[in-house]
Image 1 (cartoon, one colour):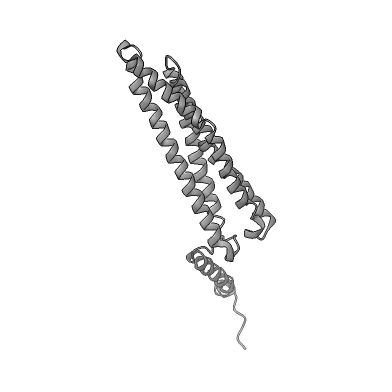
Image 2 (image 1 turned 30 degrees about the vertical axis):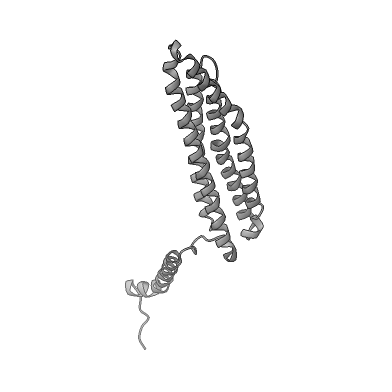
Length: 213
């Protein structure tokens, strides 16, 4: 009868089953990571396409608002540049008054638009947030989803409402006689700060929501 083996060789044989379990676990984990949308997936499978499509639509809308912000901000700066030399030139007095009137008209026509568009966009995000139970199985996931939707809405508002408000305010300052160029420039500076906050926060929260797939 062979004596029981002791010592290092015996310890190695005893460790092999545990080593094999660890290896199999690592292989399984790597397999999951290799399958797109599987590792860390939380959205119910049958709603993932709908979920991704909604995030894509939100982002397209946000980028459209961002482009509008950039265009109106650039227009206000351009108006200030061409109006500035006219202030001390009596020969261009009438032209200056026309530019002032046009700037004031821009302010009066669009001053309420940022709030209206932001609230409308916010309602769309709220409707998305209301589908928490549809998309997620656990209460913890649902709470996290709702929190990130609220942050997404807040950062969108930072650009669409706060930032754009400052741009239209800059038109109001250009509409004064004489134009308040420094105040207009300061309004645009404040608008750029809010827009930057909106962009950064939007990108972060959108990525976080996509990460919940």
